Image (cartoon, rainbow, N blue to C red):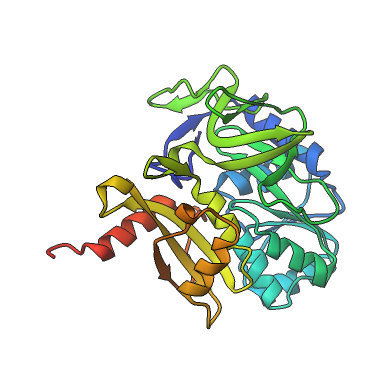
Length: 331
């Protein structure tokens, strides 16, 4: 049994058979080309789906060696990679950014994987430019394991492209525009309340997607579309454009009820940016890339965007935090 990440709502339990879990490991090893002579280094949690499928199962079922690090701090990782030698390092974008800024990425890292959150193009390009290391974007879900993986040797040019379907994974876009996943690794059902979105070897995601020339392009989440006066926009679409600004380290976009009933929702941007970046600079930057109605109306600048206990940026949690600060209890 796994639990979902709760990045878009309450966590739920998912039932799996041993064969389904083993199939996920098989697909990951085959797609990523995991090697016995490139041990996995564990800096991500082994209790989460990403670490369990990428690190624990390849060790138990395929004999891929695993070294567990006590810390993900840059110097600890640099020393561990130096000691282990050629290795595979799965991580999340926030860690790759921290290691890049600390100049802690060793040439001993032969296979670099990024998952758990969208991989900004600027980060992918910077790691490749300064270290000659390709960050391979990996996309999956607790309900079905690995879905898509970027096997290309050079940085992507489109942030919406998340790679190609994993080995033995079949993808299609449903009538509602959302991605459907079929494979031997898809879980049995949710527990204790089954849902039709996860049944019969098929997982119907809430991710809006396109399939073009064997590649997968994510267009946002159907459940998170922001409704601005009847027009809908994906927060991920705005985030992808905002993240292209050189001063933006992290960003998160969501909708909140607008004071103007005719507008429906107002777009809010929470931004962790370098010193000197201003709201007006970022607005002008977006005006060259988005329609005027897609520009955030409210902005919050923070030092960082902490993740939840599962290493995810929770849009719901940040929305609730914003609303609580806007309307404190007792006010």
